[in-house]
Every structure is written in structure tokens, then in C-alpha cells.
Length: 431
Image 1: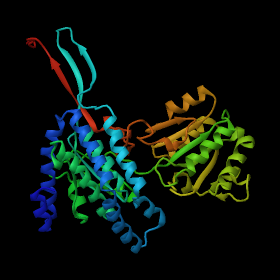
Image 2: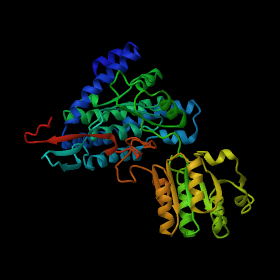
Image 3: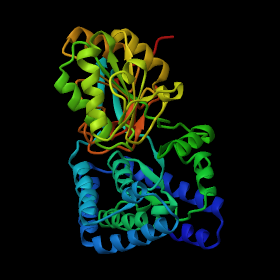
Image 4: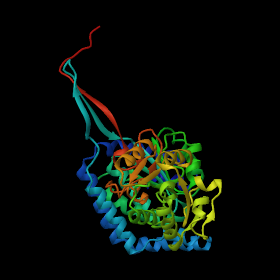
């Protein structure tokens, strides 16, 4: 933390503090934009080793956060997201090293062509500038977001949840060490040092032009506030109402495996399937075993009339269930008249996050993949693969469901924009 920011923190002047952070980040972004890959990668690897060396310190800081969360009555699932232990710290360190191993997108040529007048034109990736990330209780996001921004040549202003404040600051200390050791500006990765909610409002207003884009990572209320109040572009999704459609051409054993994984592997992630659609033309052979497998695995099933008829344990679905993000061991199940009705249902109730078809019929699969307008569409695979790490992107800063610039997992390439580089040999434009 630079001396100006520290003084403003001591003075409790939140607005001046945030503006100073923005100015420092903008200066740091200029240096990062031209930093060589080797330097950025070395900073990440040094930070990873620092995380390992300071694991006891990080866990001690995390205990302070856990104690406060327990006293506040937070549920067990929340405490699990907050928890850091030696294994999780090691995973964070390995995550930094994995990002260091990825290709550097900065400076890569997306396309190039020659004009008849001899001009050579290239479209080249460049950093966006300053990324503001607002997130909740997961302290590992501090490392993931900071590392992705650093590798893509962007400065980061991080605002973690108040419940993970001590954990995040301990992780930041390790990231800052990597920056110092390689001669990169420490202000390249900053964490808002106050838990005052006023700071979030200043970030959403852009810090007097310093922030180029905001990425919220958290629950529906956080994302909704960011989308409502932000005065700068936002990469985000509001809800993950994901669907799995089992077509009449599906392999039933494959379908059962995928559906159970897509719903129950982790029920609280945004890529978890929330609604199962089953082709009614095959429901006698498909619907009953699918519903039974879910119920036997401990999942509450809320279904339409056909689904209720398969098992007395099925609860009648309400109209609200079709657009619900349950984030729990609950699934909505409906029968549909083939792939076209499945596509219509997803268009009406989905959130354009991730949707999947299970079928052995390639023609039906291609119809679904081309016509479902979601950020991620899948064929014969669990929706829980909707993750930047699983896409080979090292990590992600979040999932975006908008149509401008970034869509789907926001990784290194999505944290860049581009510019045109034009090379000539004396050309002038005719009058």
C-alpha cells in the first residue's frame, strides 16, 4: 500500500482514498502494458513460493475471518467457501503457476492483411487497462483475479468481501512480494483496505475515469447492484439458470451420469443444472430412471404432471420453479415435445449461462447448439464444466453472459482488447 493511500485510510476519507487508488492503478497499468512476459511470469512464480512459505500466516489470518463468520451465524456452506487450509493454499499457489505457464495474449496478432495500396494492417491484442473486481467470501479470488490481471497486462483494484478481509490481505502480501522482486509496480494489484461499503459505490462510478471495466463475482444481490449502479462496462452474469435436455436419442446410462454430476457435484456453483428437460416421446424409458436416480441421490425433484407420475416423492413444480436458480440439491424437471420445445423453454426461462443437450443424434445436437443463445452450449457433457480452468484458460475472473466483448469464462484473452497497427512505406491518401 503506497503512503498516500495509507494516510487517506488513516484519515477515513473513503472518497479520496479510492480516487488515489484509481490514480495509482492507472499509472501501474501503463508499466504493465509493456512489461515482458518473462517478468510477469516470474512475479507470479515468486508469489506462489511466497504463498507456500507463509501458509501458516495466511491460515492464521483466515481463522480470524472464520471466527467472525461463525459468530455472525453464517451457514456451513458459507464457512466452507471461506475456509483456507494447507491444501487450499497449495491449490492457490499452483493456480498462480498455471497462469504463468499460459501463453501471454498481449501483443499477439489476431489478424493481419495487406491492402492494394501496400499498407499492412494488423489487429493486435492489448490490455484493457484497469480492472475493478468486486467479490464476496472466497479468498482464493484475490489470487486468481490478481494473477489474471497481471498476466494480461492490466492493473487490478480488488474489493473482497468484509468476511474474507484478513485472508485476502494476507494473500495480497504474497502477490506484492512477487511484484517487488521483479521490479513491477506494487500498485498493479491493490485491495481496497477498508470494509466501508461506500468504497464499492466509488468503484462503480469509475474512480474519475480510472476504472475501465468492473467484474462482480458473487451472489445475485451483489451482481444486481453492480449492474444497476455501474457507470463503466460490466462483465457479469446475474443468475445461472442452466438446463440439461435429454433427447429421445440419448444414451440413458450416459444421461444419468451427466445429470447427477451436473446437478449434484456442487450445487452452489453457477454452472449447476437447475432444470432438467426430458423428451416426452421417450419418457417411459428415460424419465423414470432419471428421476429415480436424482431422488435416490438425495436431490429434491419438483416436476410437472408427467414427472410426478413417475415417483410419489416428486413435488409439484410451480411456475416460479422453471426460472429458479436453486443453488441447492433441488431440481425442476419438465417433459417437452422434442428439441424445438426444449429450445423454446430455455429461451423463455434460461439466463443465457450454460445449457446442454444429451443425444447420440448429431443432427439434433447441432440444431440445439446453433439455436440456443447462451454463453456456453454443450453436447453430452456436464454443465459443471462451465469453468475457465476446465476450458484450459488457467483460471477465470468470472462468467459473462452479455454480448459485448467478453462472453462465457473471462480469462486472459477476455481481459484484453485490441488495436490496429498500420505499416506503410510513404502512402498518402488521394484527395
